[in-house]
Length: 491
Image 1 (spheres, rainbow, N blue to C red):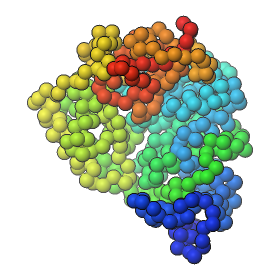
Image 2: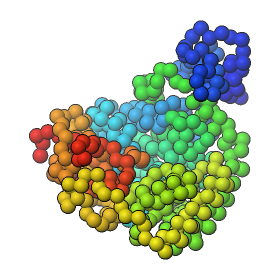
Image 3: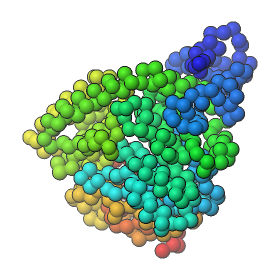
Image 4: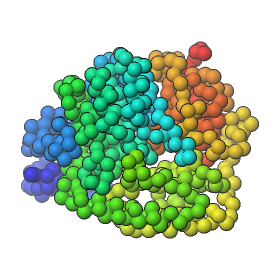
């Protein structure tokens, strides 16, 4: 089968002169590699059209479906975001009712907003020992569907950002009994199903729509993703309509070639690559078992995905941000993210042994020092005036994902986000209704959704995050104070 990268390369090497877009005319400029320019094209003869594929792109999407166990697959060039927007929009009519996990990415909430959906939430349990969300269970879905008989679709996340795996087959059975589709945000699971050494993917477990970020866990360029569709619950022509709406009309052929290249790699060398991945990852975990203070989310074969390394600093004198900074500045290791009580690192089939060795050395040395010395003091809260009100001296005592710190809806998302809003000081926002999303980034799971009531515990949580230097979206700074948007004249 012809591969897109090879076809682009042949075109770049030909004598065909480009009297068409893009404006760089396949000629490099500046410091970017000239090879990128030479292969960057638009929908010219012989290269098909992503929004009406009839040639090579059609064949590549059929191949993706075959490899991933789906009935039909679509290339995505603006990440899983476009896939989630399209999937939710196609699964439900405007004004419909969606039952979705509260730990969904912000793009799911954006889809609900754009379609003016009524939203009911599945609240995942909390692994309090590690301060993370557990995966949604079939029993939770069954109970929620009984309580929301008019729900028209269900959306869950698996794997979660931290790698927790849901029983998708069990969830799909419960959802299909109600005659509605199941959407799975599998953004962190593009590698699933390609080897017996990893979990099965959601397409092969009965999910109707599955969205995967190829770039997150496979060797592909950023922004690449796939959308898989199965069964009879989804109007596929409607799905294609929304894909045309939410995706660029000028999709990058370099990104699409990157998807093809990643899938080709797995098809040809997947078993060998995953065997080496498993060996190196398990070896790292075995070496890190010598740590005395730092703890690691167990590599549960049934519930935990391979590759995610959650390093907990709970019950130590260190914060997640401090460990993150040590790994970054002292050991030159860039982790995925820092939370209040842990750091998350990611490993994939493309990691070299060097990466595992450096992580082991860094964490064993840090663990040894952690047992012997005290950590540096925490930074002062950016808004010193709110110290007594919402910034307690003790930090890390409240789970970043505890039920008390998750908003409860008082006004619908669309009504709230379109409503009249004003900014108030964070310390004065308790009791008000949120007018904007507030979340750590990454991963982009909202602590607050527009229309949810802000509690004093949430203010406390946000201030803790800011004091520890974590990235919080939805909080603005002026004159040394922190502000959030709330609904105007709404109790």
